[in-house]
Amino acid sequence: MTVDVPAREHEFVRLTGAMRADECAPVAEEVPVAFVYSGRPHVVMMCSPDDLEDLAYGFSLTEGIVERASEIERVELSRHARGAELAITIPPEAAARLSQRTRALAGRTGCGLCGVEAIDDAVRAVRRVESPLTLSTDALWRAGESLDAHQPLNRQTHAVHAAAWATPDGALVVVREDVGRHNALDKVLGALARAGTDASTGFLVVTSRASFELVQKASAAGVAILAAVSRPTGLAVRIADASGITLVGLLRGQTANIYSHPERIT
Image (tube, rainbow, N blue to C red; front, side, top):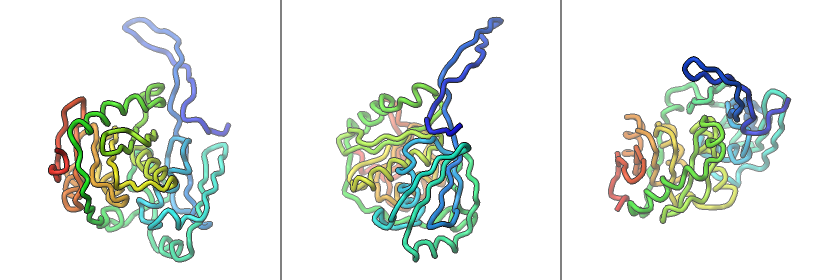
């Protein structure tokens, strides 16, 4: 059976005290997705099986495989009984650079380090984000409070993450869901790149903890503000501070913590 939907109905037995009942509810799907660049396998990621073309663009950009979306000549998606394959055609010089990088050919759902083995590649230097963008607290609250309404898959399954890109007034423009938090963010950034939208003109909101690879991806996209509903890690805070990114954590209702560059939140 080809898995091409993000959730399927599944039967289960619910236990309540001494009672048992047969029930049915949607369960989130995760499938292996192989990334093949110009005919060369690079990595296999566990992903939700939708918006995979967006994922191909976002992953390629945020992992530094290409520098611009226009370098991606073609993306071909093939679905198979056990997963999917993204055949991504990139320029010969980019393919040559990629062949020099060590890589691990399997990535778990929660892994943000897929495709790299060397420490220098994992915690790579990030570019400095110089941006005049500022937000009012009202815009931050608006984006955080409206995110739940844009998560249909999570309402069904309660098992996936979401990432969103918002305009400076807090309006959500692009929202993507995935079993992997970094996949969801790559899908958002890939969708923006495919649409020709400058990601640096808005800010990002994620439903997960703010781990360091999410800050790296925000930096690669030139996004100056990243807000998460959970707490950041120490490495994420250090990278955000060094790269000029405003990192917000524990965004819940009308409360939040600003861990770096608080001057952007007015």
